[in-house]
Image (tube, rainbow, N blue to C red; front, side, top):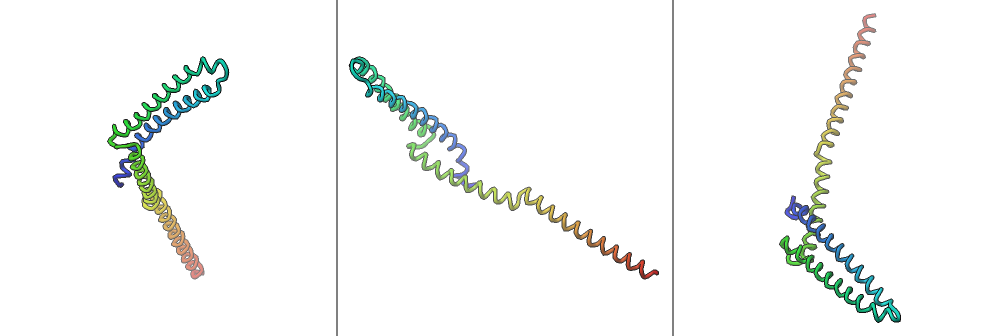
Length: 151
C-alpha cells in the first residue's frame, strides 16, 4: 500500500469535516439570499420601514459567512495544510491511490484468495472423482471380461 493510499482514511475524515462546514456556509448563503430577495421586493411604506432592518440582518449574515469561511481554512491549517485548495489536491491524489490499491487488492484476492483456493479445491476434487470413476469402470470391465472367460 502506498503512502497516499494509507493516508486516505485520515484525509476522508478531514474531507467530511470540510463538507459539513461547507454545508453550513451554503445554508447561511441561502438565508442571506432570501433576505436580499425580501428586501428587494419591498414596496411603498414597508420599503422605508423594513429596509434598514433587513439590511442589518443581511450584513450580519455576511459577517457570519465570512467567519465560517475563515473556519474552513482553520480546519485545513489545524491538520497541517496551508490552504483548503492544497488539501483538496492531496485528497484527490490519495483517493485515486486508494481506489487503485482496492482494485489491485480485489484482483489479487480473486486470483489467490480463499475463493480461488476453493475453486482450485473443487477442480481438484472433481478430477479425483473422475479418476475414481474411471478406475472403477476399468475394474468392472476386467471383472466382466474374466467372468466371460470362465464360461
